[in-house]
Length: 103
Length: 103
Length: 103
Length: 103
View 1 (cartoon, rainbow over the protein chains, first blue to last red):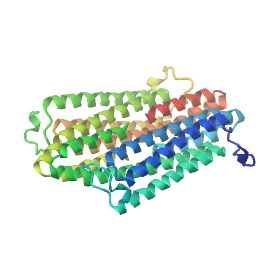
View 2 (cartoon, each protein chain N blue to C red; view 1 turned 45 degrees about the vertical axis):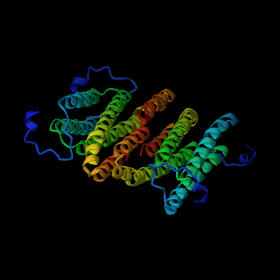
View 3 (tube, chains in turn purple, orange, blue, yellow; view 1 turned 60 degrees about the vertical axis):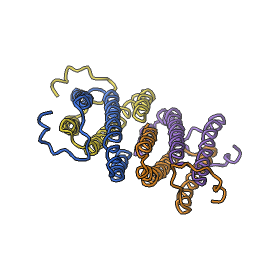
View 4 (cartoon, chains in turn cyan, orange, green, purple; view 1 turned 135 degrees about the vertical axis):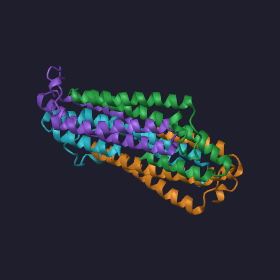
């Protein structure tokens, strides 16, 4: 990730490994492909029900990758914050994002 | 929609107008952009919480476009089926896709 | 259901059979018991996580009975309305309640 | 809460104050009342849509009390665990229950 080297990474962040990034990117690329697939279906006037089934599949895929990132964040970044004495702040942040998701 | 003319449209489908397609495509293009934005964030090792906030925004946008399509389908295709005597079959299909979404 | 006989039933309603009522009541009684169980846990200062697991079980049970009623309504009342020519109004009502649930 | 004194409270638990218990109990009593209200509606063969609107209101109320308990748990019990050195275990538990809710 050369273009990241000069990136001011958030100090609260345990950087993702190359493997982690690849794994998440693969999922996100698939989701992008699914969104483009839905665009094609809409343009081709494909049946609403078929479009809706695809949208529901994208939602499930997004939920999965979101939960994966949430767990990874808890296990790495929040756990690190706990060790370093800023656990409560990190926990607050976690609860805020969970609230966002539950809306 | 020239490339659609020879498309074997589902007979149950009330075709989308040019305006409808444009409106939905605009939303789906924005969602595609948001997904690509999240990819960039992941590659750049951006903070998990910020990535998660973006994912939650995509979920909200997808839910909105999905509900829009669902309502459109009910108001057009199911309503047409009701008038033409195949309302119950159409209703069954609608309930199945709603079940899918509620999972 | 003697006490229902003089009930001004909604004309859009296909009355529930004794069996249907018994089936739904059984589920709702169980849910009531679960809610009382949670009250007891809160009063006894039981561990939050255990209380939350119970609440999540109640949510799952409610979702199930809700979906059962929704399907029953579609299959009976909406189907009847379709046959009798008021299908579109009934469909609109159905979509409104689905919107409510999806909030 | 005299009847709780001899209760073997979970050591991970920061006990709820009398005020907290009263506040949560009030909400749970209201939810219990709502569940009984739905039972009455079902027995009286009230219109499905009206029953469904009530069920959706109960779901919203349960979600609210659940989130309240979740936040309280994070702010009290997990925060205490972090201070006492068992933060990671407590965080794992929290994530598990969140996973349960997101199902």
